[in-house]
Image (cartoon, rainbow, N blue to C red; front, side):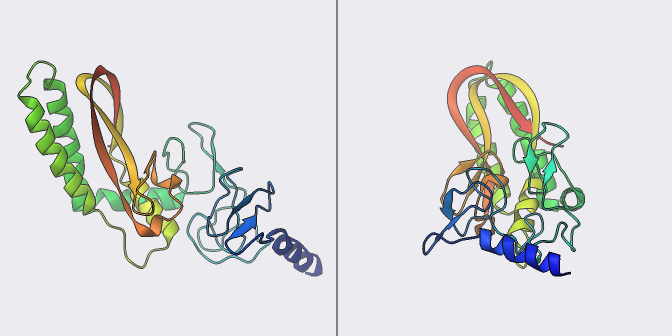
Length: 231
């Protein structure tokens, strides 16, 4: 017991604040913003007082979260080998734990998400016609606007933690890999409300509680592309 208390004190000492809103990463020593959850330099958790997977409170020194059971050492994605401290892989969005699987099941009963998936399919069908039917470009724009409106309606529960909000959006990724030759390149990214930046996925956002949306963008270009739609 005494050894555990000493270990906890040592862990807290590692979190040394460098300035008013800055701190030193306890793992790599880089000076970073104290409100960040993960170090942008080494990618490891900056604070030992909460779980990066579900947001539950933790006692510094604990190895596993008492709420979700995830370890502080993170989870290696079985698909791409990336080390993660969140429920979905930050690189390929692969579900990594029970929280992710539960979020996916909830998404499948979400009527708004079902509408979005159908709209994505319709959008892809129109995109395939654009090369041979120029008139399809207007139809594409209308369906794209409708899709973005639907995505804006996908909102997590107001009382959920920032970590669970991030999991909510990651589970509603509407991406499936397929190659299509079209005149307009279609991309899908995550646009956060925190700074308006486009991220690969919600895992890259440092303030998920502020919300955001999966957003399609278009660029006039003729090339073989990869559109992502997850069923």
